[in-house]
Length: 436
Image (cartoon, rainbow, N blue to C red):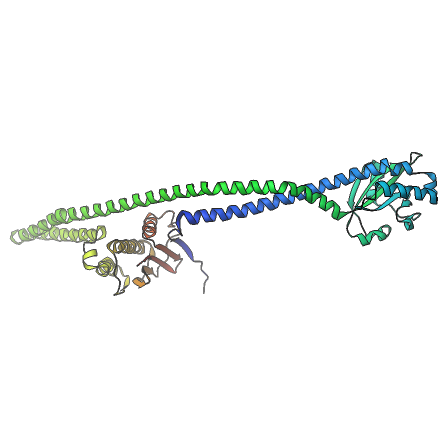
């Protein structure tokens, strides 16, 4: 069995709850946007705060290294002299160790640690990493998260995540050595957090104020749109009423004028043909037959323009008249109108126009063999015209089909909806449903 793709051409329904629902949607989407912007702003502020805290840590390390540690570097310290080590311990405890800094190290370029407040590291030799060597060469302060897996950092593992700041300083001979301190990363994060917390309330408050200001503006815009929609529907209603009135006038004028005149001509031709010579009589009888055929076509047109029995005899009778011409065209029709359907005049007219438009499309495009016209009442009342033809051409979508657009507007005005479903070689179904 071949595959096929259903083509939903048109479906329309009335507004959910007017401008109130539109403003609620706008407010919810605006609030979601507010949350996203606030989250993004807080994230950026946190990053800026952390960056600023690391910069401050570098400045403090530079002050401690060049202002304190560098002054106590001596050949005796490099030899491991206990007195020099005690002197450096005193200087470090007074000026560097403030609770945030948990370790201090001084390295020679060859990787030997000449001083650390953890004395077991003094005299140990480890290969300097590329960042430390780059800092020695450039003379700039650098920082990064400490690698606690490295053996030279084994005594710092108990402190958890640490920020390692290192800068080159000079001993008394002018040789560059590397000064390192290890700061608790939680202290850096806390400093950054204090910074962004100082700005976050202002940022979030400004965004919230902007959101609150937009809501009344959105409400006014929604009300203007609603009034525009009401004006449009009022104009449409007047246009439909004027169209119906014009249909009645045209039908009345044709029936009372041209149709009656042509009927008189037909009678005259038939009566005259009886007394005319045979050759003339044949021509006159043919003319009378043509006149009667024209009268019949005009009366069919009158039914299309305005069904005279719609509100007098009811929708079922009008639909029977509407589908009658399909039989001679070879299209079988099933008409099913529920007996308990009682419709207002405007709904009867709407259903009739929908059936008329759908059947016109069946005759023109469908190449159908069978058509179902059904009126049901189940809470709401609906009319369905369904055929087994070739389906509507793709170009007859809701953008280009004026008849469907007009019916959709009328259905929406009545508080209902119009659905048109079509698939290639699977026929077309047109359904209009309104509250009963």
